[in-house]
Amino acid sequence: MRRTAEAEDLSAIVQQALGAEVTITSVDRLRGGTKKGVYRVHLQAPAAPNRQAPASVIVYSWAADENYWEDPTAHTPAHDPHDVFAPATGMQRYLDAQHTLEQIGARAAHIYLTDATQNVAVVEDLTGGTLETLYATDPATADTATRDLAKILQRLRKHHSPTYGTLEQFRSGITPHGTSCEQLVLDRALADLDESARREPRIAAVREELAGKLKELRAAVSPRAEYCLIHGELGPDHVLVSANAEAVLIDVEGMLFFDVEWEHVFLEIRFNERYPLLRELAGANDLDENRLRLYRLAMRLSLVAGPLRLLDGDFPHREGMQNIAEWNTQAALALLNA
Image (cartoon, rainbow, N blue to C red; front, top):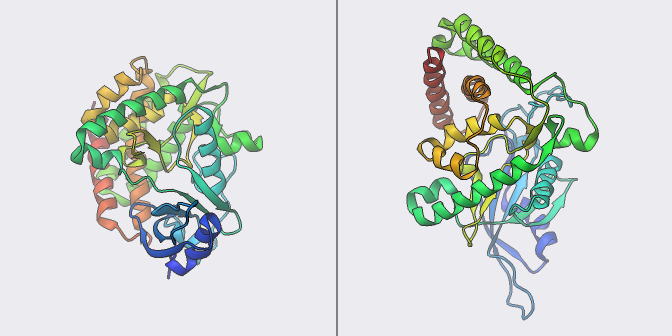
């Protein structure tokens, strides 16, 4: 039985961050997190002449019970540190990404406190909502934030490296597996295809055709020797909007140096009809179309295999994951004959 945090669990760390006079009035566990717990902690502080506490903060918890990709009661083998696609989680990976965003001039949520012994961080609560929500409720603010997001994408792309890898690998001096991004993506896509075929009969029925399509698309990709910084999983739900309509990236633990096209196939999927404008604003009309074709199919297969794997466990919000798997199954099958 998983145990998630309650107010009494978070009280000490919040008071350590903001002062002993601050009290918690309520705690909401926010939906959507699969690798970490995200808690909005509502606060009350006695009036003080020279002190102003925020009305709420966010607490991130990377405790084992918060990670629905793994069974906290079972032994889980250590992840391969050389694997670029190893699960992107942990407080240190979060801090690596936050510091990198600050270095390139992107707005990042203020960090009040981190505690490595508890694997928690207390950070600024940006209450303006996600970009995804604002598209429906406040289009004008959403438009301003989208333009700011495009500027962030430009800054990320200008941050170059002659090698690919996660920020953790760069910090630790670890050489990642593989010879190229496109080969890593192909190998992962073939593994995702096998996994999807075991769970989804429609994928199983055309498994060989999909494998052949992936290899054909890989063969058309030319070598590359420079990579840029990407978020890795950037949708409008992973962009918060500040009171000044600034775009603030969240769920940043997966940031890495990689092909920019890998970022853009995810943007294309998640921003949907809004993507062409975002791509234009970001100055990304020069992307490699051969890479995009390979990465589109690979990403769709990843978004089938991942949700179906998560549904093998006890993830509570099952309908949403089922919908993601179904939508991407249909999209992968459509790409087979594209």
